[in-house]
Image (cartoon, rainbow over all chains, first blue to last red; front, side, top):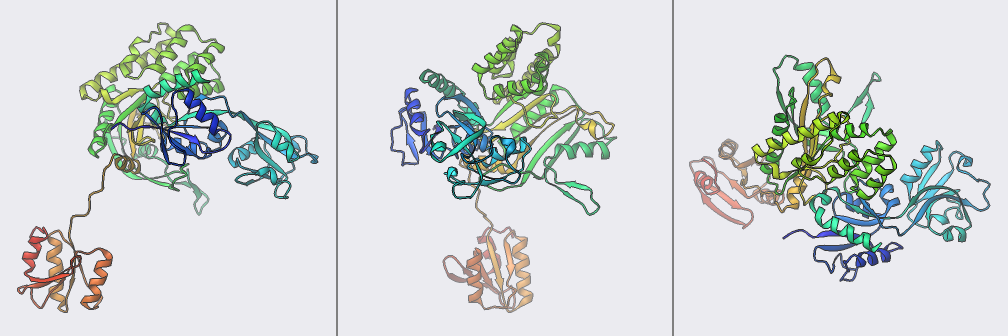
Length: 210
Length: 361
């Protein structure tokens, strides 16, 4: 029997619902409750896997799934060697450097050496500060980095921001933008060859639904 | 690459691949060997791998190099050997995706782009983003012929489909030569009857920069990573000495082959040889029995610990032995065979026992 095309969808967070809806508009309706590991879809050629958005780039790179819906920022953070076939245009956000409102720092070049930076994006943060020739200590946290300055864990943070609401609520001020991101359809390089016909067709349908 | 310092301060490095060592050997140790030279290797290489699944740093690679010949026939031989090697290990639905390193490079040069623009164009090509590719080419004032060629080339999937591309202007001479070589290669693939397994991929650009002609990757649909790859490198060997030698070759990763085989449902066959421990108070007869068993192709070991039979049986069970054989003062008499799995013992002549367990004596 021919192998089904596996597509990974974020299992929670702000990317999940728009991803499910977009697939629906493209004719792929998810038929099973996402608690199951592999969900059938209305298109028998595809099956859906729910996974952490952060892990999806890696799943795609290693061919555990053929396609994946995840953020451009995460693909870069995980340094995943995948094809980014389509910009799905939702989940728009910016990776920013932020400091407490009371801080005297107004620009990146004012950050003192050896400042501690809390972030969920250690690779992108490190790269950014290296490119700016700044020596900082990057501290990896797995969520709510905006709390780090309050707790005295770090003086600044690198985090994604879509509306700026969370940062404002936590009395943080953006001093620089690192990169802009949207949600992408990522594809495994070998799977693209194996399923080129099906994937090209899906792309056309997804473009129609955007 | 893994680098460290020798005692005298010299930098040492672990090899990350074998083509460079082969180039060095060809230059320094084989200067008068008639060409073409065909070489192979099966060895370990060391690389930092991005894998989040395993922390592997050492990989076993098997590869071949055909040195001293720049004909399409040499390239054809390499591709045919690659396919038959993959089929020989038992892989099904093998495919090769092949591009030409110089074709893309020369076309990019003709387009008159700077390095950064070249990078973004290559990125668009490898992401198969035809929408943005068109946009990019319009923004950068590509001549219409070149624009068309790029779009057509990124749609070609078979080597002979490139015949449809017409670039008749002298500035495209180099590119046309590469297109011609693809067609010639296709004819050779037909002779080997492997043309159905080889596909064209314009965007295929290997991270290793030394390729000058064909570049390719091998894969199977069940595994999301390439099994290996290679290509032609005509200007690489000369970096190691005076010899200017064209060359072509491939390397396969043995670990990936195993993964692919498993993904295709291959099971590693179980050890069929019987395992026997010989135990006896009479050392000379025991040594003789072990010798006979081993000569017959049985995996035999001598009980060297002087422990009692019961303990030997326990040990045998633990290490996966099939039988414990207790011998008396002479092999002219029957021996006692204890079957560890069924816990049954019987008296039998050693020769008969050997015949029963499939030994060749």
